[in-house]
Image (cartoon, rainbow over all chains, first blue to last red; front, side, top):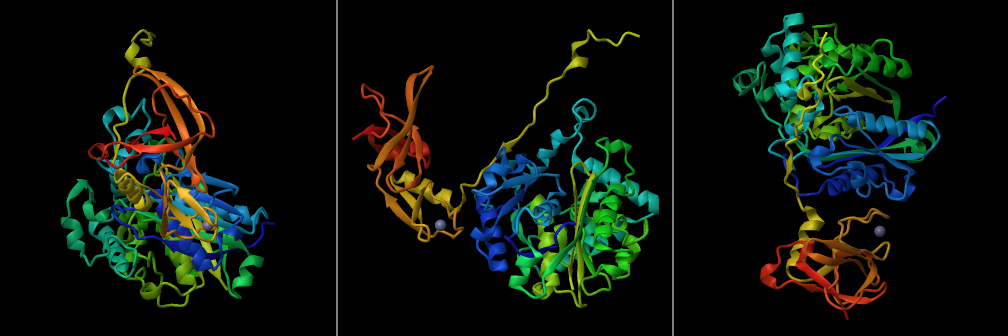
Length: 387
Length: 147
Ligand SMILES: [Zn+2]
């Protein structure tokens, strides 16, 4: 039986298009805030897991090694994990097994991404992720396949662009209350519809920005956590899963790999009806349609019905089932690995009543964070619970 | 069926990943580079651990304190920790790793060309390039010379 594991602290930097700090310095700031939030010092940390997406962003090969000092990993058992965009939620999962296994009492999980160095645009990092023999000669970019996925999702369930745009409107508005947010804004569906067409149907305001930032959480054994608080936040479940490398072989209208990851986490958490037993969720939203896609994969809505749930207002911060009360990637920003970790931080802040103006109205006990990545094929799911 | 194995372009092809970067020097880095440009060296100080770091950092990797205090390190206080020789197109160059008494870390640089041979432990001073040639880089130190 794994040991019970708690989250005892969280911290994050501002998310901005370009930060003056180096990647190491960003990692340090987030890590220091997480340690301060937990009320512990680095000497009490047994192990450290860092997460960061492609080295190409920061422009430093061996980014794990590079981030080590700033992540508090010096002279500790330390490693870096990397599962593309899903890294931010996968990093605390890796930290979870460090503690659950009995290996350590306190494990730091730190995620950092500095996308701004990469010129002429961070998207260039993705040129080389496609198969060099088959697809690369066409000059394929990530936006193409997101557009193909969005289009297929719209087709499968007869969803309109305007219904999808509601997600962007909601999340950017939520982000206005996030002190670290890069792109909080009051916008309308019409603004989204009229924004620049990038790769139809993907428009400028359907997409999250590129960002620099870092975020961190501290995980600890139940015994350690109970020395700090009577009422700790527990890791109730975690899951991760991946689809085929051949993206052309996948069902683009439904993320089966996410359903697999979610079922793994629900089983561990003893959750039978996720919609009823989970109070709110931070769902990965690099694009507005992805929030809907992911709500369905997470079994919050039936296939094709997440847009209806969104239109009903249920997923608003003060709705019955808040989705992305933080403002999500669309509003807070998308420094890849740090963005996923930001979601884990938000679940922790909400469960401990530290979300300030973002605090959801209803009482919350169980929250879920999810991220998505690699070549749109990987999902990581983490469920936190407070009694 | 002829699979055209003699057609080279089907066996292999060339491409490149067209990436460029614009790096930020960072909080500690920017200040360090400005100081180099002025021909000076400073280390950041961790009071908890009683340590000086050069190149400077904004945090202590041990106790994780934020470091706000900086202290001068005399360019004359170096010693050779290790060295090696390179032979390249423009002749022989001696690379030295120079440390400073009481300071954690060290600076990589070149030993002054000439008859003098470097030795481990040799006391050296950092000689900066003329002011107008400095650009805010470790290469602003022209070489280290024996004192
Ligand atoms: Zn210290």
